[in-house]
Amino acid sequence: MTRHRRHTPILLALALLCGCSSLVGGPREQTTIYAPDLKIQPDSAWPAVGWSLDIARPTGAQAIDGLSIVVSPTPGELQAYRGSSWAQTPGAMIETGLMRMLEDSGKIASVSRQGSGASASYRLLLDLRDFRSDYAGNATPSATIELNAKLLHLSDQAIVGSRSFRIVQPVAGVEAAQVSAAFGQALSSLAHDVAGWTLETGQAHERQHRP
Image (cartoon, rainbow, N blue to C red; front, side):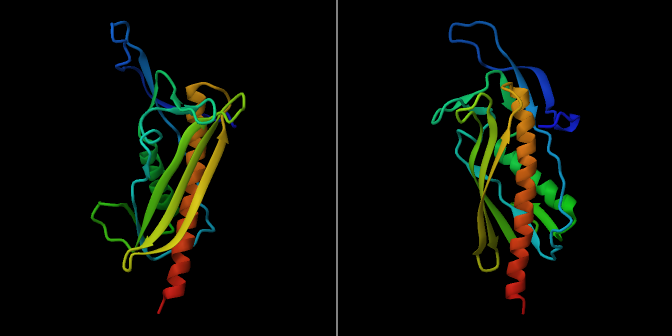
């Protein structure tokens, strides 16, 4: 994993107090909040499309789609990094990354969030299946994201494409800051892959059904 500064997680706050004191009292623990740094690099080979898209907020199990930074030290076990938290939920991070990737690509007429009031030809439905730091029997974990995407044609409510994406990005160490940096890379790769698939799938459907 590169050590370039742009992959260093942004520390939004270093001294926020959380309610982690014991039932009988005791000192509160400081919480560091992490916002993974995404690298937005659209692909010039993606098709330019004339239709519009809205993106539904990813849905996922509460255990993986919360503010806790989830780690799986052994198979089937979920824990959270103590004294660390995400600035946004994983679903919100994925939605924001996709918005930025598609907007910055310049390849699509309009992209918006579902519920914004903007009209759209297609809707991207996202099911978040995994978002954790997974040791998988290794000495250091990997930032693991699994997502299923479905592209819905709104005029006839037809699913025109479905694909599952899995990103596994090795972490340089075991600290929460290193985990956050790896998730920044994983989220960037995921946004790139899903954005490209969405444009290609929607455009293929348009060609097939063009009068």
